[in-house]
Length: 589
Image (cartoon, rainbow, N blue to C red; front, side):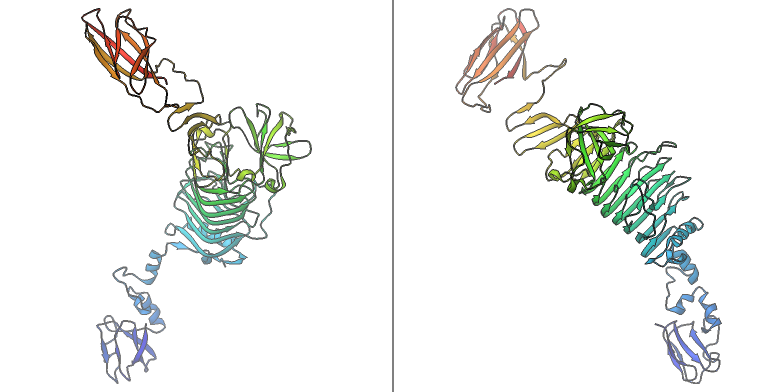
């Protein structure tokens, strides 16, 4: 560290560029800018011990010090010397090395009490004017009273805040779908390459975290490590331009009046889709109206992470009618006493019509306000139907965590891979790839409608569209649940094509009892079909195979003589010099 190593009057030794001597005659301190070690004998002056100037003594007091700090080697005066890294001035070094601003530079306090809205917004606006600064980094606890607006950045915006919370003065919401966000992204002019991260987000039970609006953004990343007490986590609302391929990530998200991630196409503008999102949150829990809501425009979503205990305000009703015509999302239905909001309607399996309703209370503990045999009617009475079944959250560990609401679309075509999920509901599930774990449900996978399950003894193929079984595989056989329709194709086993020479017996095939039938102490049976090139050559027979021999039964083959020798099946013909014949062997027992 820098220090006073004596005076010119008393003498001293300087070993480093930041060591100084005091000159009592003028009251200034001097440092040596020449070679070290510098020995100054008693009774010296700056002039007598090397002179003043470049490569000699330099005054470092008051005006001189301020001037010297501005030199290229000025950093040496405060104990920093790295010419191998940068040999400019201190100011130039700082300008080149510090490429971010902090909210505190614009007046933020970050104490979790003072309203920092204006300061953070000023920092955001400043980045639009200084292209050398591309990030906002804040390591404190920031509270705001209104939405921060991020717009007008073509690309390359970064904001990293340790903590972002809504103040108590934040306006309360009246509808979980219309709450104001802590951060509003978009406006005029689309953006790409945004990177917004918050280690802690708390909406104070009043605010969403992020809304994407207007021309929005694409190819961007939004991260909340710990997110709680929001209404919705992230939701594109009224986008007017493609806002696709964004990445949403996080650690632990819980407690929201709405949905953790809600994706749907905008209603105006040019192709306002929100396709191709990556949703990768380690654990999502406690969002009253579902963990993830995917609707038309959110195709090709890639969903990861775990979901459980979401959708406690939702009930799934199976209806007796075979139509949902006349229903709209967000409309209400009533049984004459209670009302609920329609979140989704769909067929699952095909031909079974269901409604997913938000009842406005905790259905998992209170039970549903709707019961079997009651009649539901929508708000304008254009649709009504009788309830045939009611499913509520927490029953059999089921929760409507992920809502695949693509009814009315051509397909979903999403990829869902969740280590654990309380439940996946919605329509067109056969158009999406999904795989998740669940402690109760067995049918938790599907690849374009094909599901595989294993009971421990039987591997089964299921049809997700029809919600039924197609084929079972047992240890020694497989069993379809359908008739086998071959169209113009054939069923065949082993085939042998041979040219039989006149009056010569040929071995066609040797059998042995395999012993893998459902009953092993009876003979095994094969059907043999014979066909030749000429009319009159052909027919069928059965071959019974025992443990000691084979036997021909029910022989209708003409112009070919069949015989056996122990386990060998043989054939001969005497009609012409050579005869081309094909034998088809099918095991039937």
